[in-house]
Image (cartoon, rainbow over all chains, first blue to last red; front, side, top):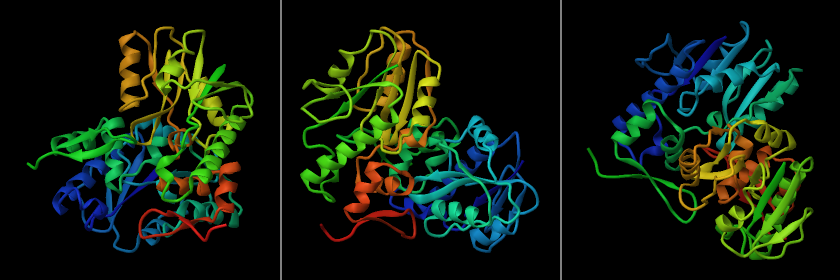
Amino acid sequence: MRVLVPFGARDPKSRLSSVFSPSERRDLAEAMLDDVLAALSDHEPVVVANAPVDAAAPTRVDDRPLTTAVNARLGEGPTAVVMADLPLVRGETITRLLDTEGDVVVAPGLGGGTNALVVRHPEFETDYHGVSVRDHRERARAVGATVSTVDSYRLGVDIDEPADLVEVLLHGDGKTTGWLREHGGRVETTDGRTRFRRDGRD
Amino acid sequence: MRVLVPFGARDPKSRLSSVFSPSERRDLAEAMLDDVLAALSDHEPVVVANAPVDAAAPTRVDDRPLTTAVNARLGEGPTAVVMADLPLVRGETITRLLDTEGDVVVAPGLGGGTNALVVRHPEFETDYHGVSVRDHRERARAVGATVSTVDSYRLGVDIDEPADLVEVLLHGDGKTTGWLREHGGRVETTDGRTRFRRDGRD
């Protein structure tokens, strides 16, 4: 199946600026993109980026807002949309996503996001603003499309905030995990959840 | 399968004290327990609580630390351990958990926790301190048990911190969701992830 991988190439991962410099955030975002593309290697990923990026897959530069750029590429047969900041995703996770039946398949992300979609209905359009997981379900129903959900932790954990980084150290095994370790990342235990901690600078 | 549901009945959910009073946190914790027990209705849940609680399942009061109280009940045939603060869990989620093969099956929780376990090996013991998901994998290997993981968002999102509450409003459909709505809970959109917001007081 054709799989779109939107990539925000301008000042990526700005909510991690308390932990990493702009150039580090760029490297981290590209490591995550590489991990997602590796998980998609049995499929046909196309990166849709808002600025040029050197990716291991065909890349289309489209500087329109995310929602517009994705919608311009829907409607020509079944298409999946998988976000580029999901470094826990593996090939088996993608198989589960693509094997899930439904005109529209949604993989929720933390905090109301939509981390992955499968679109098999010609009239469905995305809307990544606001509470997108709720909006996508409503839009699907509005065009008469059946909706199903993939219950996946690996798809659900997108890396946006410092607290997310610990998940990569605990559950990742790709480039992103290696990059974080090389840049001083470690797991700090607390009374509650573990936290990401960065040691030193290199 | 026998399923243990540990419940911390003393000052529950203390990390939600910025949002709810002690008696509200108690009510919220009991609503979450009810939702988990409802998802377990096809099985044999036993609540293991560190103080008396009025639950819709057989309850054992055991005031020892969580790890000790759980380990005292392992070893007599296959046993699952499902945390009481997983209000997104449904019957189908439990089916996936219990159908996963392996001497030890782990469902990771946010921040390194172990939100659910299936134990089919007589020598495996739990350790809920520290980075429990990592420790449980290591302990399983140390006793020669095979380990597998359930990739589930509904099992992965435990409700510990204010940011978690929005997940219940977005993806829950049980008592906990109703309770939060009745107590002023709503979804607030932001530039990033949505947030839980509490309106007024009742």
